[in-house]
Amino acid sequence: MTTRYRMRINASLLFSAAALGAILLASPAGAQEQWRRPTDYRSTQLRSSNNDNYSQYRGYDDDRLIAPKARPIAGQSGPVWNGDADRVARLESQMESLRTTRVAELEAEIAKMNERIAASGSVLQSMNGSYGGYGACGECRTGCCEPCCPPVQTGFYGGIEFLFLKPHFENSTAFISSQNGNIGNRSDARSHEFGYDWDAASRLVLGYTNDCGLGFRTRYFHYDHDSDRPIVNVVPGVGDVQTPAVDPILGNGQQFFLDNGNSPEFTAQSSLKLQTWDFEVTNQLTFCRSLVTVGGGLRYAQMEQRYRAISRWPNNGAVSEVMSNHRDFEGVGPTLALDLLRPISCCSGLSLYFSGRGSALFGESDQVYRKSNPLANPANESFVRNDSNNSLYIAELGLGVQYTRGCFFGRGGWEGQYWAGAGGPITNSGSLGLHGLSFMLGFNY
Image (tube, rainbow, N blue to C red):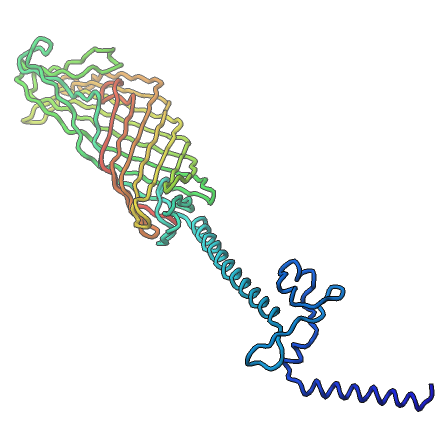
């Protein structure tokens, strides 16, 4: 091809390019974009998703659309593609709806998760064995109340409990008196019983519970008081006073007589001392809105009972006869406990509590009997001692109301104890019971 023809072809191409550029520059930007060949959708997707939209297209080559039908819209210059605009609007509406729904679902899931984290991450600090409250240091855990199930009470807890108890003995006879001769042959014989008042006792509690509900607890209980002092006056040489049978030292059913012929006043008194130490492993469990603590371990106990009878002259206080009987028990054995704490209402701080315990103790019993006559022969004293193996069974029950505020709590209720095989001031037979009011102040940390 000659150079002249080549120059003509190049000039024609340059002229065509310049004309096309001028046309494009003269057209609005929106129209330029709309007249471009759409490449966003594939024909196969269009067929499967919307056959109506597909009918707007004149054809396709391979997998790209060639050109949609143009439909003019009022107020706009140049054609726009109604099919694409409608589809985009529908897709955007669907996406917005899905987004709104999904966001709401995620927010609900996050709220539930936060409630579970708050319920499981916080603790009802216990005062409980069941010594508990409603969260650590003033926190109000609403998630633990509705629908149910408080978390375990972790950390250290402790308290001091004040009890006002009254003992009841199955055998508590102090002595028997008669104003008209031998008691066994007189119908006016009268039995004088020991009486105890409502006396103070104390209990100390200290424990710890880990995040899994496992822990330990130590308790100490103390009671030490004297009975009242029954007194009887009889006519010297006529009246008579008889003590109960000192069992088992003087034989089963055998009775001892004090000679009251020379002194008109006779009095007796007994005392009771109880001490227990508990060392146990505890485990906390949650049942719908209730916190249950079970414990098991060892209990060590001491029991001391004293009996002392005196015959004297009231005018000068001279003692004519003295009789005493001391009974001691010391033993150790297993103990099992169950404590329940049940909130009354959500985050009010009020709860109902229940505590129960059973112990079986095995040890030694020591009994010492003495009798003397200081006026007749001060050096002459009867002394008998008896040592034996013995067992003691103790049951305890308590219930009441507890109030918790912050890291501290207080409770008040009733407690009863039953000591099977404790005997009485003189005899080994019979049982002992105590009951009364209980008040406790404690902390959770």
